[in-house]
Length: 238
Image (cartoon, rainbow, N blue to C red; front, side):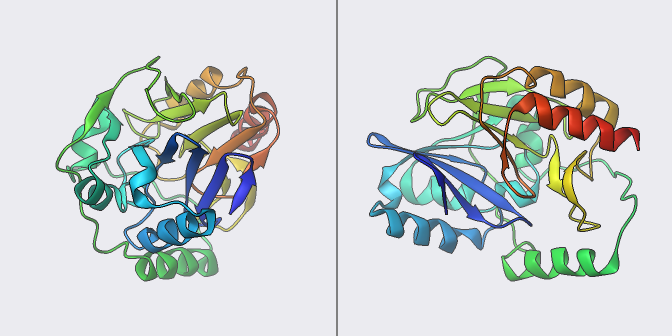
């Protein structure tokens, strides 16, 4: 789905990944689940592009519903996969801490689990090779994406800012659709290692010059980062 010139989304409001599309190539942000491989190819076909146009894939963190097709893409195309060093072990399939699930609604939970199973969430292929990134790195990829360290959901969680598409990709730094309750609207993301740190990290994106804030779960936010950060903090206070 084209959100704006040069900016596309694959997946849906349950789990999403994004593409920055330029004449020089494509940058992929997150890799959803393994079954999103077909969605990726369908989107490329719609644009008249191919897998060989992909110059690199950036993971906002190393959880299974973001690692998805990353290893397959790396193996089949040679495109590098970029991950913050603090999440490298996570992206290789290492142990993750247990987190509180909080409030759940059975319909939303069943929908999330069913979609995850349908899209291959039970058969994650973890990364075997990756490229470490650090806070402030501007990667030599289409869209000139810049890495912003936003730990909290995981130690190596990052946001990715592209001035070309005036967007910040936040992974699970926040959500606009809670996968366990189905509640729509900006809020803290579930399954977060350190909720207080995740909220504090939002300061790092609040004043970016962007028109889009794009989470891994939920509707794309067409508005300023400052406004959505305010909304997330209000939701957290409730």
